[in-house]
Structure formats: structure tokens, C-alpha cells
Image 1: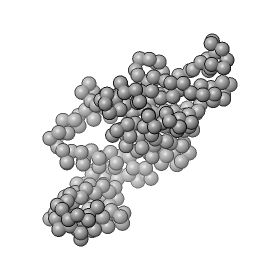
Image 2: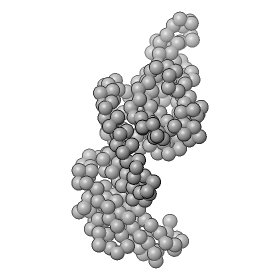
Image 3: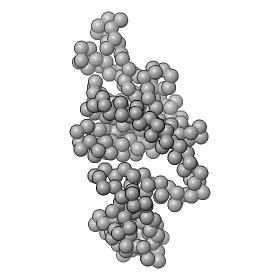
Image 4: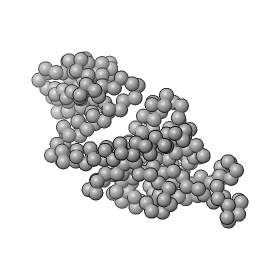
Length: 258
């Protein structure tokens, strides 16, 4: 990464700031590059990374509120605060007005806490997160957070909706929940993009999985959806939780629903 000696900005994200690889990366940049500036975003004022760069002429340390220094295994508030800080620090003119929209979206998520709790009470054994483009990273992080917060008791998986339909859909079952992240951009994981709004609906007969059929997730089709997060009118993304609707079992006659 530092093989080419060009002016470089190194951005370091560190909850504790004491991880040896975090400190080593900053030291390596300093030793390999003649012109390097460092932006250190950390949740721990007492961490080694913060201490070593606090007074350095070519470094800027941005400290998060102490409450964001997560004590648990999963990074939650620390991850969110550091990401938002980097977003505002690197493109303030473009993003400062969007913070209110993010706050509104977060409030809408919290308003649906009871709905989320009801999903949790269903004791799903597997949860699948699907997203395309930038939302693919969100799907991956969601799967990781679930795995960490449940200590591995609930198996999580992430993919793009298109990739999921070609093989990985085999993980679907009666105890599986699929979470699909959709963007309003029709060319990038948008709600009108066929590869993203078409997932697979499992078909069961007597508790046995007998196959899959297409399931259109476009709002207004089935009525078996719960929106857990929706950005304001001018927002670009929304989250959609899909509870698979009842499906007809083609092996049991036209009037048999399972």
C-alpha cells in the first residue's frame, strides 16, 4: 500500500486504539512515506494511538464521546459514531445537512422497537441479510453483528439478492428470516431493480421444504412486510424486513396453503 511514495492521508479507525496492528500501520506509513498526514478516529482518549498522535504536527485526532467506547464484544455505538465522524470530516459541505435525515431515520427505527422485539421472540435459527452496491457492506456488517450479539447461536449469512438466488437460497427454511436492504436508486439495488426485489419464497408441505417460487418484494404486492427503517422523502435508502407469506403447496392441490 505504501510502495509508491506519494502524498498520503491515512485514516485510522480504532475503538480502543491499543490494537498492535493499528499502531503498526501508522508507524509504517511514517517510515515509508515522506509526506503523510494521519486522521485518527478513536473512542479511547487513553489509547496508545490517541496518545502518540495527539500532539503530532501532521496528525489530527478526533475523539468520540466516552460512552461510545463499547465494552461488549460487538462494536455498535463505536462503529456508528466513527463512521459518521469520518463521513462529516471528509465531506462536510456535502453531508452536514444529511445528519438531520439520519437522526430522523434512527428515530423511526427506535419507534419500531416493539416490532423488532416480536421478530426476536420468534426465535429464528438463521437470518439472511441481502444488499447490493454499498448496501452489500451493510448486509455484511449486519450479519457480523448478529453473529456476535447472539454468541454464534443464530447463524447469519449475507449476500446480494442476485447472488442469493443462485444456490445460497438453500438456507431458507421455516426458521429463517430474510432482511433485504433496498435503495431508491433503480440502477443500484433499487426498489425497481428486478435482481433485488425478487427473492425466493419457500414452499413447505407438512413441514418439509419441497421447493421455491419467486416472491416479488415490491411494496404493495403481498402485504406481509414490516418496514423497520425508512429515510425521509429525499433519502436514498430504506430497509425492508420480509416475513415470508403463506404459500400454496403445488403437491397438495390448488386450494392447499401452507
